[in-house]
Amino acid sequence: MENKFKKIGFAGLDHLGLSSIVTTADKGFTVIGYHHNAMKISELKKGKISIKEPRLKKLLLKNRKKISFSSNSKSLSECKIVYISLDVYTDTSGKSDLNPVKKIIKDVTKVLNKNTILIILSQVTPGFTRKIKWNKKKLFYQVETLIFGNAINRALYPDRLIIGCSNFPSSIDNKLKIFLRKFNCPILCMRYESAEFAKISINTCLSSSITTTNILAELCEKIGADWSEIIPALKMDKRIGQHAYIKPGLGISGGNLERDLNNVVDLAEKYKINNRSIKAMILNSQYSKNWAWRQLKELVLKNKKKPKICLLGLSYKENTSSIKNAPSINLLEKLKKYNVSVFDPAVPIDAINYPVNIAKSSIEAIRKADVLLIMSPWKEFCYLKIKILNKIMRGKVIIDPYRMLNEHELNKYGFIYSTIGKSRKIK
Image (cartoon, rainbow, N blue to C red; front, side):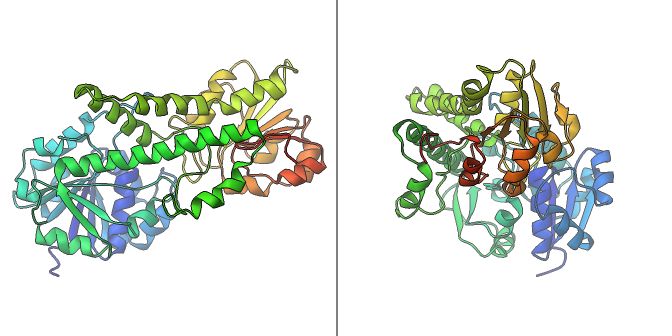
């Protein structure tokens, strides 16, 4: 492989771009990262990353000799392959704003050699890639399948790579093929629109699993079953499988799955296809996000007028600082008139725009609380000592949707324990 080919460019340095850059460098390539924000570039050159993602900073430092950053788009002109890797942001309704992606494509294509391979990695709607004014033999769409909190492993060891081409069957440019083979996984080639819709289809199927799981888990609470006892039976069924999304939670959050559910709703309306089942997933997600609120009202608020409420975890999931559409934020909206203390190991203080007491530790947040709610499944919450909780809490109610704590130990100390998928009457 010639050295001049080994240089790969990435335009857009948010979660997607940074995760892609460090893993590409780890595969042996020299990488150039471009972003229009000069301040962001200055911080990255110093090795400073504001994004919470396990192993991201470690891999950046490990491969820093192979990585350069620039706020000048012309720096990409020496690359034979350039990815558009800007995160696509969504609003609270899950609607995408593709204008920043269009702008960065316009800026980048002005400076690239016409023989440069251009790959859209940002998630776009079907039909987007084909409209880009670039040689279609050099233009591709690649499906990103990163997961917040596990992005580095997913990028280093993908299940498969899905590549959209102008037509199918058609061959992938040889330079791109050599690069992709470094990831040692199957490469699926399809037309642009199929690849763009593949990502939406994946997320819609995941949303279906999440929605079905939450419905069945709540039924367990009513009929005296325990969802945790049922999960092994489902994982051993080859039609469902050990990696299925069958752990119940507080709805669908983070923006990505919601975006694709809305994409399907919009496309179905455009082509006059029944979309009621997809709309039902969105409604069920909103309902599931209120599970903790329903428990809090029943167990605490109807009996105590001015309780101290403790929330552990604000991010929408563990190992990320993102609070996009997080269940905790949904709950804080309802608790503005209450005395609330919060703690999260990753969410920055300036992101918490609510009248709450922000603690520096779990113990500080829990002290003298009448009720404890664990709203994000951070692993460190599993290690809370029940004996200490009994000593420092004023009340005896724990609402733990993700089953982070040991229910048997809590029962010994007389706690009222509420979790998803199991009736409180079960012993």
